[in-house]
Amino acid sequence: MVNCILYVLSVLVWGTTWFAIKLQVTSEVAPPVSVGYRFCLAAIILIPLCLLLKKKMQFTLKEHLYMGFQGIMQFGLSFYLAYWGTQNMKSGFAAVAFSTIVIMNILNGAIFYRLPVRANVVVGAVLGFLGVLTIFWPDIKTFDCASKCFIGFGYVMFGTLMASVGNILSARNQKKGIPVLQNNAYGMLYAGLFVLGLSLMRGHGLNFDMSVNYTGSLVYLSVIGSIVGFGCYLTLLGRIGADRAAYAIVLTPIVALTLSTLLEGFEWNDYTIGGCMIVLFGNVLVLWPRKLKRVASINTEKSIEAVS
Image (cartoon, rainbow, N blue to C red; front, side, top):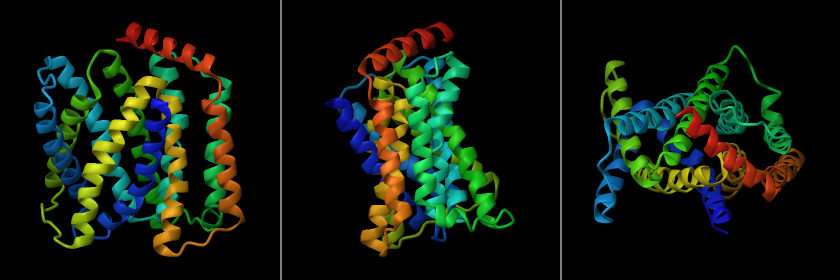
């Protein structure tokens, strides 16, 4: 039951963040600066919360290095690239690109931790990706490799790879006893400062947009998208593994479409309906066998302990 709640919350939260990100990148603030603001604000909220809850906040230098590395990969570079990409492409393309994290997690788990690649997870992940492609097929048919959209797609794909590496590091940190809440607090702080520093090096000023759209989306992304979303997702990742947890990303475009229907007048067609059905069927395949899930969890723990 707990896994189901974490899974549903992850899907619902991240399904709404693409719309909020679009509000961020259309402002006068440079996209990477917005990323820095987002995670610094999230850290400013999380760290006092940890202290208030009397959580352990003292960690070794090695643990800080791993938390920093995970944060920079999963929060910093990942969203640094995703924000730039979203600025030059439709949000639907961004959702399609980011959904490939499921397959990337499987491959990275096999490469870094020698985890077995299970057939049901692979088939379910492929079906999920094909379902997302079906949803956005009318847009994909008009894809122009010479356009800015192609460059944006490349940015988001590379950002997705960074996020996948961050997922693997998060699983490692949890297995080593670093709690999710503190891990996120320090990781987001390091990521936010890293991206702001990178932005200054590239000549971006730390200006701010006081409009309701910008400030509202920033608060939403920091509190709901970052603190709640990543808290649920990374906890789920530690419980069921990176490959199954990442399948929540595949479902986010469906939530995004629903939000677009309510707020932007998006009209459903045969592609969106058929694609949603394929994604849901793939979801069942990925999450189905309990026995395999237990074996995967044991193998993940043993492999991570052996490598670390």
